[in-house]
Length: 240
Image (cartoon, one colour):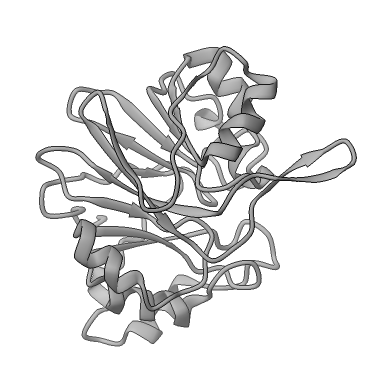
């Protein structure tokens, strides 16, 4: 697993296939320069339509022809620029397995749109996604969201062991909300995302650790953007 800055996550499977989740890269000031144009992408997953999550969609589709997993409406909008893309649309509560990789779409509390010529275009409901691969811990990317009590149901239904949670505040939950989400999900590892990219995203990892307390602070995995972390059946190995 590699955090590419902001909300972008790269998951490299045991057979070297690559899943990119919300890969806003080329204009992302947090993404390392050498990772802004990834050499491989087999699955492209979007949690919602905002440009800081989908801004590289057309480029990645054109270069790699990946399977694209997103909400039905978002797939339709992306198809306007990429009509030959291999879309696998879905919706909240659904699960689909594509070439051995299982994607489950969960709810998120946010908004979702793509910028059109005359204003925002509705891009379906915002979502989170749980990625499951045999032999590896389930990985939950919460998307942009506030904490919500039904995260307990995500834990019960999908048993993710790893959660990438936004902590930036203002547009998503902040550190205190992410700490509550960690308890609701009962995950082994938490990867903080969607913070620090811009000054307005003021949540910090230190504040998340403080909100978790001594009992749970060791669940936080804090890689630098571009630093790979080993993904195992139990979760993520500690960052050295």
